[in-house]
Image (cartoon, rainbow, N blue to C red; front, side, top):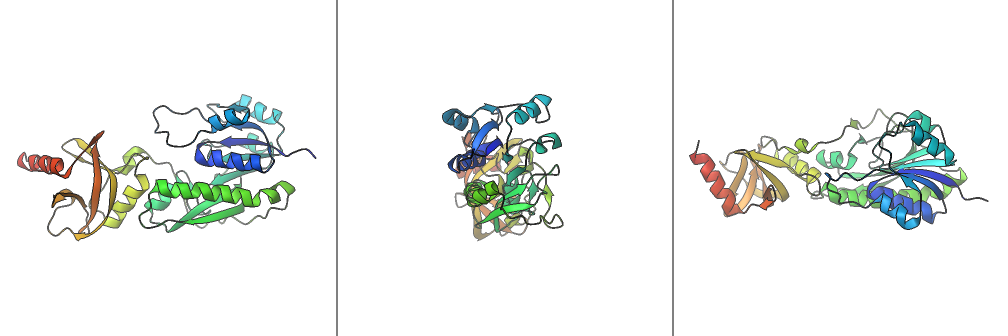
Amino acid sequence: MAAPRAVVFGYHNVGVRCIKVLLAGGVDIALVVTHEDNPAENLWFESVASLCQAEGIPYITPGDARAPELLAQVQAAKPDMLFSFYYRHMLPASILEVAPAYNMHGSLLPQFRGRAPVNWAVLHGATQTGATLHEMTVKPDAGAIVAQTAVPILPDDTAFEVFGKVTVAAEQTLWGVLPALLDGTAPRQPNDLRQGGYFGGRKPDDGRIDWGLPAQQVYNLHRAVAPPYPGAFTEINHVVYTIITARLSKQTAGSLPAGLAVVDNCIFGVCGDGRMLAISALKAGDETISAKQLQERLTTSVSTH
């Protein structure tokens, strides 16, 4: 019996790990569709293209998922199934009609549908998330759920740390259900779209801090966008300061005004509820700013106003 053939749309760490699962499960990957790396982006993740080169898998990097040439190439591969593992473009109905299609999403659907699910989960203070394999439909993240695996979000986890857990959860989810998927016995569960919500993409400017918010919300923002993401930031005298590492402080702010402050040679972020973030690493551009440097700048700022 011939091995089942698949066309995979994939990118990022989840793409790499899930392609490896398919290979280990005996799937013949006829074609991989991935992305050209963006030189302006911080590429902290693994390369699907490099994996394809190492494994001798044909791959292409089209700029438009709706291009007729792409549809023709997918059809020519004669796949038994399609997979999407963190591919960044929506697949049109014409491609989804070629073969049964499955997507790996980085949340416990129907929670956190849409873009950047891990970042949104951390930002909203969720205590767990996970990975969900589901049937693909034209509407994003709306198809029936095939399998999912939960992971915890600990109180101090950054989105980067959670993404590492979600990558493992995606690998486990696919590994566990792949035999049933290949022999046609995989279960289906309703994806109740009345629950959860749909979230859009995030831009670097979404990391701007509102110090008037409660400390937990500011801390969740920091955790959601901490490096290697662009980071939570604030601006003083036209200088942008980005928080690299921080924790919620047990100290209270007393009479300190909201914003950055230096207390006992330590940097803090004073929040609207009188609680503070203890900031252990702060940068202005590529320059690491010490408590002494920040104090001098804050003093200068006060004296010029």
